[in-house]
Image (cartoon, rainbow, N blue to C red):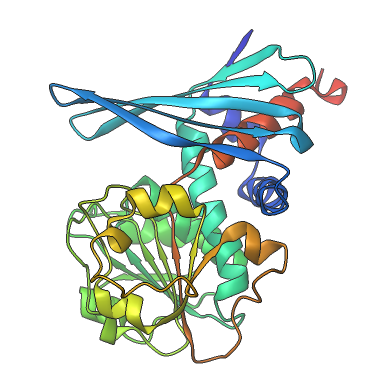
Length: 307
């Protein structure tokens, strides 16, 4: 069984490849042609072991992602199987897959929930996920400016991000970052809301991806209340894990607000309907994403044209 490193993943697929295969996977899920396994966390003495997975017959793969969390640091491994004969196909380091798939899904959601003419991106958190979100959003929209709030940003962040995204970047306060922003990405480890929901501009789209724990949140109740639509990857896991929703005032988040990504992609929900409505995407990370992307890498590496 082959082991595939993060370096091999980065050399094999692009963010655009990730977006295509993940859209197909969520369309399959939206048509009940794929299934997911919710994340299970096991903890002892501050050390966590987490597992989640998926079965995607349309992509001929099934598998599980397993990872540890120690002092806030993650180590990921994916095991991939064939749905045609059950063979174990490969193992993956999966850091690169995690980085690629999270941003790719935010872009997939943004294409249906953000305005097509979005120009200004507010980025809260410029770590691995934040930077990848900036790169992929800049590739999907004609951004003119990226405003970054990150109190821990390295001194060379601005030139590095400008080179990676091909657009102007500047550091900002939370208020400056969100003011007039068309797209807002929260990729922080904050345990409390990063800004007031009343600060969101009409017509803005928010991708909240930093928290997948029920006791932490990046958005306040007002942001949720103003949203016409809150897109999620999968209701059962999101409603159990997403502190942004779990900690909201009782009854604030309505059933008619929530829509799964698969429902957006298969046309069950129309997505953005008006230029001035505020839309949200709340991601916690689901097994479907990891297995779909691992399957794509495996197929690329197994192709006779690469031998």
